[in-house]
Length: 494
Image (cartoon, rainbow, N blue to C red; front, top):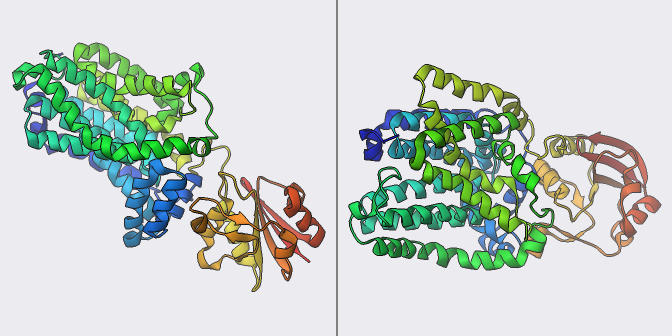
């Protein structure tokens, strides 16, 4: 399939082809954006972003260095917009809308404007677009910069100028700062650059010799363009590598079954993921060699992360969300092979099939969705029944559930005194607080204690381990228990 004239001119495909996907994506991601309460990863974002810059830098040196640049961005954003769920997630919604526009432009440049339009519309209705467009994490930004870097690469290969190379270099650097794993996209870029350098004109109409300059020179200029990213992300890679045992202690080594589950995982819907894979396969067959860039942008990052994940625990499905627009581009090429009405009907079908997942992700962002943690419900109970002088405690305190952060986010200044804490998260330059070694001594003078524990328990103090559990059971009696989804609140009294 040869690209049409509009496909060759790239940006000349016109706003009418990229603006509908951008607007649709923005509308879809804004619907219910503040309804689901922040889940544990978003609580980490809130905790980090609301710290002074110095504390934020010390945090990155202790844990979560790979997400440090995003936390720094959110620090500035929250200072202006606040920390409500909507405010925390709005940058991601805007990033996804821009990513949809760039996806449509890339489809128009590589193939035809019609392919770009269908690609962008399909991307807009995917549950994953809403999921990560409504999450205060860096995946939407990584998707945006992945598309921007790829779009700029196609431009620089057509007409290489220093200004275009500079733009591409900045986009790649931003991609690495948004998410280190997203740099696996450079494997696809490198393949395209090498083939272009040999004069291969089947990749979106790009030919290295036709663009001017020697093939070796083109490769060297591409490598030079990667230097800013290398300089910026190398310290992050070294720090993140030293933190991996803590940061990813919940991740297992990659298994073949993980590849089979990948489409449903990145699409946030098994049936929509299957539909996307089927359409992408048809589109790749229809495009032939023109499918090399989007196809490589899907396959190579997946294979690289899977190969690494079989040796080091790195395989996390959401790390590959930036590949979804490229799969949509291939699927858009398949849809462009029929009349516009049936093509749009398939897009609508994808939206309908993903409807239950769209509704579910607006109820909770926890994954799996069958195990949500109702921090808001727990906080409402405490706010309704607390009295002056009340104290609060948590179990477990050192888990990824972030029980203390979840309650603190919901209650704010109304939170009872954290009587067992001796060093908070900021003092530790961490995401967890330290508790006193002798809980019985710290509980002296406390008459009423709110105990927040993970899971649903009829006798919460019985599940608290160690000397803390002993101090609670010996010194207090349970007055009332309120079980909620994934969490239990108990009021203890002397």
